[in-house]
Image 1 (cartoon, rainbow, N blue to C red):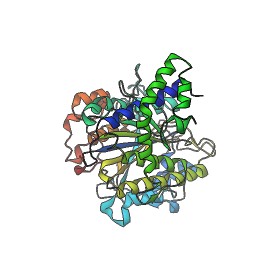
Image 2 (image 1 turned 90 degrees about the vertical axis):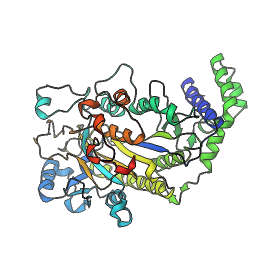
Image 3 (image 1 turned 135 degrees about the horizontal axis):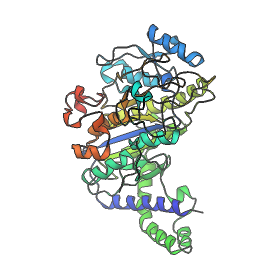
Image 4 (image 1 turned 30 degrees about the horizontal axis):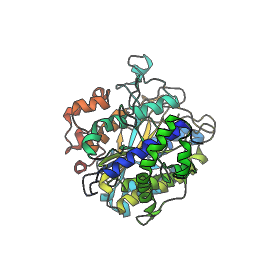
Length: 463
């Protein structure tokens, strides 16, 4: 039987779908942008994702990581663009599809679609090792805790907040009325259940599954209208829900029909038959329906769990990257084939990186790590931020097995994403990112000059 929470979630989706279809939707030729968050639950060991290849820095890496170190000759070499940091890096041998996106599609360095941001993590204000050890500046709450750091990546509020909202939800509170005129469909669309990231003060999520919209027929096995009318007998509350469902279900089924009409071999691309492959296929279909949903702006949340590699790292991480890499490559290829390369931007996030030192066979909770940004708007082929020394007791090592103090804040990443997404005005940025002014003066931005951007991963013509 459906619980009241499930009924509420489904009927909220039904109501939004009904409003969207009734509104009279604009064509897809209008300005549209989709921001996709790929959340890697558990804390990915990202210092085995992006690894120094030059002999000196690789030597530090191998000495520190011991049995967790990948062989130098197995690393897939990255060819940095002229505006990268000039260092020699390789990526995990299971990430060949992402090597191609970094180095250039079909070998064309002008068609780079991916960059890395190194040593990024949750911060309330800039901090060095002395600040940390002497407790001279405030630390994020619950450092090295899964739940706290997941929350902070998704809220960009390391200090916490009584009324917890996500940064994408707060953006939707501001942009939805002006960007998605005529649509009541939430611009916060999750392919991975409920999350904090997309919840605002007034914005709620539109939760979908890998099979499409949440409908009673698909998710509960019930049929309209008989079972829903029986549902009305349970209570006055459920009767009201059932009546709303009866009015909205036809429009909800329209959305589902449109979703189902899109072939799984999407835009000539076959997505891997894996959980993450099916999730990214569903995200691609949802992006392609944004005009029919009346959305000029949308955020999508996709997740992949299982990255908490305490007891073993090498084989499990290899297997998971072998799942993730072709799914991401297929997703970007489908975007390119649909002519949406310049209107979709994907970024990765995770609870934290992991200790540099092995605990015997795996690694433990740490702090700053490496993340990816991918898409046509990205000035690809760069390693940005400040890649740290991987020697133990380096200037960024806060101890306890090699936990790296971040040098790039989550706020800087989010600010640059949102400049592309269309947020403007210092007051709006302060509402979404209360700590941003500790790291960056948004008033100094010139989007035509990458050197003035918070990090610099976007092309000047991306705006």
